[in-house]
Length: 393
Length: 137
Ligand SMILES: [Zn+2]
Image 1 (cartoon, chains in turn red, green):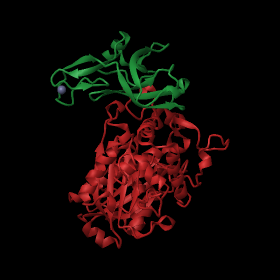
Image 2 (cartoon, rainbow over the protein chains, first blue to last red):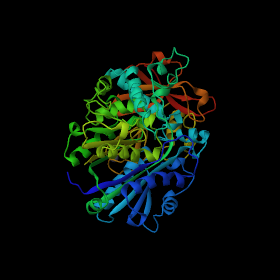
Image 3 (cartoon, rainbow over the protein chains, first blue to last red):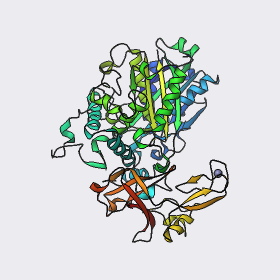
Image 4 (tube, rainbow over the protein chains, first blue to last red):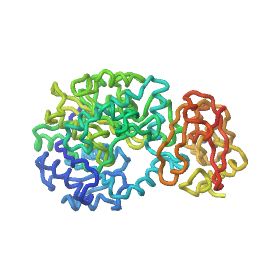
């Protein structure tokens, strides 16, 4: 595993409902933290990459606007989009720019102000989130797509509603102790009990998925600063190296998808590449962040990443193996479910969590045993895009 | 007739596969097959990604398949609210042919099961929109 490109600074805004500021001010929150973390100034930055899901942005071509606000002009800047995996795609591009020798230090900034548009506008756009020619005319939406996978898992793999609920309870455990999370409340089984009139999470959304199975929308930003080996050693006492990157794509239309009871192909395809590049296996991973946009997505990720055999992801949550003290801690920052999912900022936020874990700076969320290898799994759309990135000290 | 007639609500009016809508009006659900290499596509495509041919023919989709998975939507995107709840699913016909559609409204959610034998048929809505749906075999 070559140590050629490092993360030298990480930052993220608090993830909130209805951020009271513009997208440039939101971007500044993550940028400021990452630059102070790296201990560098704008003149040390050679290029910037901005990432978001443009259907939520009112500003067209935001890269130039944000680069100016962050003081990153006249350096080159541009924009990357793969919906919910935009910022991990941005990091892949930043890595490539450095590896190619074009630049020494690259800022990757993911942002999303989901509240930029009204909820009616948002709903209308959600309907166009997948194949607008052949699927949206049936009235599809994100929860329905993930519900197709959940249904197949329940029918073929013995997955139960309790398993999904227990994923949500786990994320609630860590959302409570993550001061940057949008959902700070704990989650109890009674929240999913439909006989309980106060149950917050029991209502059906797209059966078998319920309100509590879905992640929390949020406004937020994240920032990852990448550097080549020479600059990393000069600037950083604790560089965290990118050891492996995998990325994959899949058919947008459900009619062209492989077996639904084996989860998202982008997960296992990207993981295979990333493990190979890093020269490690799933057993070497000490802490992971996976794309739990819905509870079922976390179960599928366990299997796609090789933490559990195909069809056996449910066992990890039953055995509490993915809790902080477990065999393979997953999403101990609350994940998308509780920390929140500001689309374009999510991948960078997952990476920040893993970098802090590997540096031993994750505070109350710190995984014991001084983890040396961490993994980020970030999915765009309904498994349309997937990035797996492996980090090491 | 344009493609804007397809589905409960169409989001795009123009495609070279718009003849699909004419077939639905004739009671047929058609996919496309490449005349050069024989690759079959559903939903239909006017171009073959396997061999780069633009020479495509139509073929009748099979009528017998199994329901691979499904979901019942209790919330709907803008413009579909009146239909709630509605069930959508994926039919597997074998030989790498699958289809995504709504399940017919007369099938109650509790009667829909993964693995059940199903068929498909064209459908005309009261406002003249056309589509296809999954029915009990
Ligand atoms: Zn062909």
